[in-house]
Amino acid sequence: SYVDPSNSSDNIRPFEWLTSAESLKNLFDEHMPPTTTTSTKRALHVGCGSSTVGEYLVEELGYNQVVNIDMDGPTLEKMKQRWQQKHTKDDKRLEFCRLDLVQDEIPYPAGHFDVVIDKSTLDCTLCSDEATAALLCQVYRSLNAEHGVYIVISFHHVNLLLPLLRDCPEADWAVSHQVMRREVEDVIRNGTTNSRTPQEQDTKESTLTPRNDDSAWASGSFQPTEGYRTTVNVMICQRKGGDSGIVLDRNEVRHHVYTTNDIWFQSTNPMLTRTRHNDLKSAFGDETLDIQTCYTVMFTEAEREHLTFEHFMEDFDAFLETRPNVKRDCMSFGTAVSFLEEMQ
Image (cartoon, rainbow, N blue to C red; front, side, top):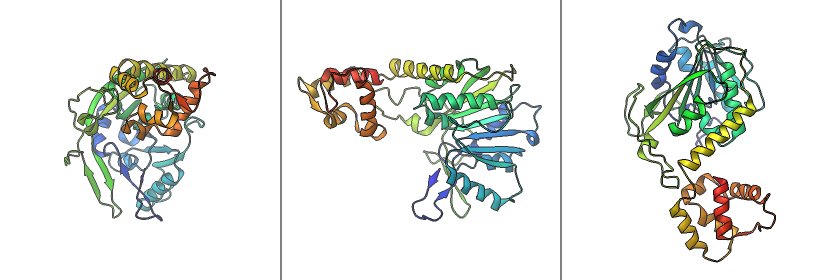
């Protein structure tokens, strides 16, 4: 959700981080079965935040039911008030549900939804195997087994997303990939819409473009490429019509998420590159450095924006659990290398 610091009494407003609701129309049209009319279609938006995708599905595409779920109660309440101001309190076509996917079950029957929309929620959960497993299991359970489709809009690389979704244990869905040009949309307080791509394009349609597959981590540190900034990957997971009673095993899915992440980062984006190894060797020499200096030496400024010192220490404490003879307040070059290899 977007928080506007200029107005503390009303600081939540609609904002589309990855791409606008309108730009998704082609995806919805293409992947909904022709036998399903818009008046009977039901959609679930996981991690909706302050997105207006749900409003668009109801108002413009004629969906009969859209459910927005998120952990952020204040944002959901603000978006609910916005909906009721535009319509009536009795208009239940757009519903709002606060829940934690790890702890709470989506309160709708299995197979209830024709489409599940995920705009970077999977991106957010991928730092946690448990949260990602919970998300995938609940999404799969929610989809109509005959034609349900899970649409994921993501910043992550297709070579990570494809095996993660395609090879998910027991998941009976076909997975395909498209690329969409980013469009950021900010609904201003007077109701007007400010939409723009990172290149200030005015298009409202979904634009499929070639994308450079070089990872933002290809150099061994986080260095976003131009393609990373201007396009997003779209993963389409279409149910094949299998057994609607199949429930994914969360433990198996959690292990799959862990393994897929591990293979991806070790083979494609190694944290301990030859350049980093040599730089660390030069920085440490034969000395032992205090832990704060180690943190500064081991990670670039861009990496430290994502990995705070507190989180670094949490990881280091976990590393020390199997190494009782290693000190907590300092590191040698060998310890730093071992830590980065395990942290990967």
